Image (cartoon, rainbow, N blue to C red; front, side, top):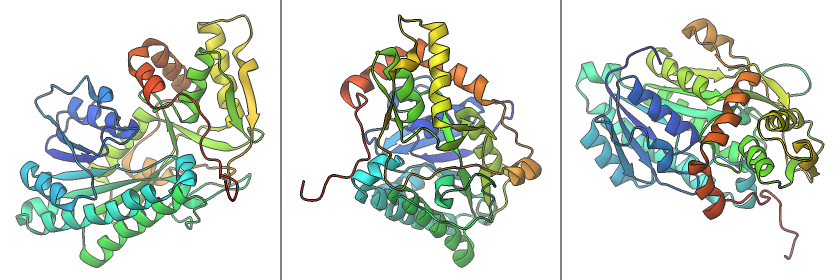
Length: 358
């Protein structure tokens, strides 16, 4: 990242996929970082190995629902800015059990807002004026598009899953704190991220690792669901631009302008692996269409014009360049993903509703 940063940034959820990328980028740009993470199943300190000894980096294992612990972290670290990423974030897991999503994404966001507001209110006027709180959310809050059109910041919320409903609630809380208390917060809504250090239950790392192991690659329904794919490093650049130059009380959509059907995503991965790790049969022979999940949104597509026009951000990676980098990273970094496959998630199906009475 070319831009140099100063100041102290408190990051919640910084051991997750996007959060760890944010922490690495902030430290690389010269900021001081306090990473608060509960370390649930997807939190992985190995993703932070390259910065764990950096002088400006600190980690604290804290649940954002633990208000006294969060308040103590604010008081000791004295942040100038907050990037709030801590969230339960897998739709399939929210179908299997929504409570953790409500606890973290709604109650946890409320608790964090109250701690941050109290801290901000007590700051000297010069530091209070410069304080910012960025709430990182998802395009899934908008529901599903038809074959045409895009999500804009004016699109009405219409969440379809327990996960997206919980994130929508968090978005509304943050903007209500702006309007009611004058709290200096901003909301971002991103499309589907992918890239290095992605927990292996999500589509792209699951397809890569199952293919490498000669296991079936599950594709929901007929594979026709469309997502707008955003390389994680591009997302991080957008978040830092929004945090430093975004307008208080505004929402910014972040998307890669890279729509692909899920089956196209998996076929592209298989083609790359056929070239880099050939086997007797094409990797695409492992693809299996499986029962779709309930309430599966058909299409997401982000219009990022506001972000591009106001803050000068552009995605650097197209899907072809980003997916090539991602596959190569997984091939080169078995040290990171193998312990996860062996101890936390081995590729089993999630997101099915148990039959009544089961």
